Length: 438
Image (cartoon, rainbow, N blue to C red; front, side):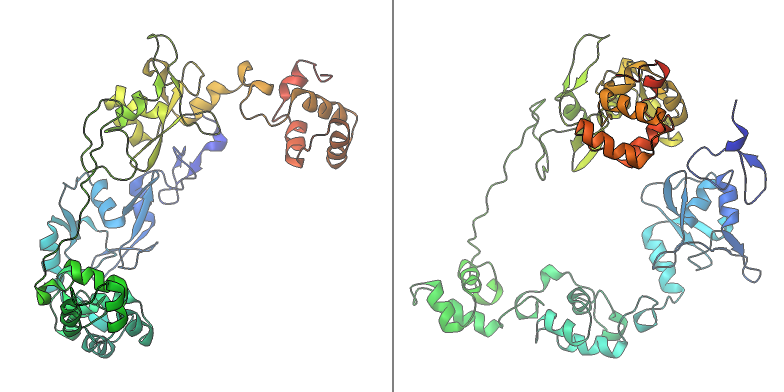
């Protein structure tokens, strides 16, 4: 039976409900949207009145999941968004969450809507940091000065200067078309250090001057610029040199567990999949025995498996791989994986089950094998805890207990630990068993 003190009243419909997660103030996602939107009488838009990003789109959060507010509005109506599709605003109002003003479409259709609606660009954009006149002045310096010096002159960043030079920003003012940065060759490249004429002259020194260092001193450029020129890595379109740079062959990496070649292996990968990473680090035994995790573990004793730069709980991965249907239900309803064997390192799917967080806490409450020094979170011994119990029974103050325990036992304890023992939060087994004289 649910306790009445856990029940709340919804801010929107005022009905009583029991929060299923966190500190929820609304009984459902629909009430959450109604409580955070305001209807515009002139246009009929449901305007999001909570947090918005720099582009004006609302950010909603429900059940631990963050979504854009207009996307959440469609999902509440039961409309799924297929892969490769986006949600378009018919009313051209990014804060609108009215499902009647939202349509599904491709990114190309969304950009066409943006062009037809006359969305502000250049200095009229709310994200603009420069004026159109400043953008034109920056564009005229393309190929003449380094991007860093231009950025410091106009109090902006080098990335913004490159975007203007490449036509990716303020193109309405500069009348330039967007180009890829990799195609800007020679002196027109924002990162260029010399002109095309200087490049031809330096390349002509190849063979006439014994070393690249001597050529660099004569041309007054860094040695790295000369070496790249002579190897044909840069300015090859004006020097006619062939790129002779050596490229190391990519190292073939095989999975440690199944010896399969890992495609596009990046970083320090050792396994081809999450299942291989789990199987290689679990000591598998009989079907009824605990399969203990043999690698990295967290402070609470749960194993952690790493894959592609991310860390997962080993027992949750084992459960999700063994029961994929239950895994989808567990993630959607925010359930936790509990150990029937009460062994945090166990990864045997037969010893795992899905419970709510409250059910998992109630199961572990009052367990004898988790009390006292047997608890993996215990920070003091039973002897020190027993002495603290004796001093509490004598009526000593908490601050005095700290000094006496430090003098008698040579152990430094915190005021929080003494308070928890006094209130029965920790080491209550000594009081129940009458073993305070340990």
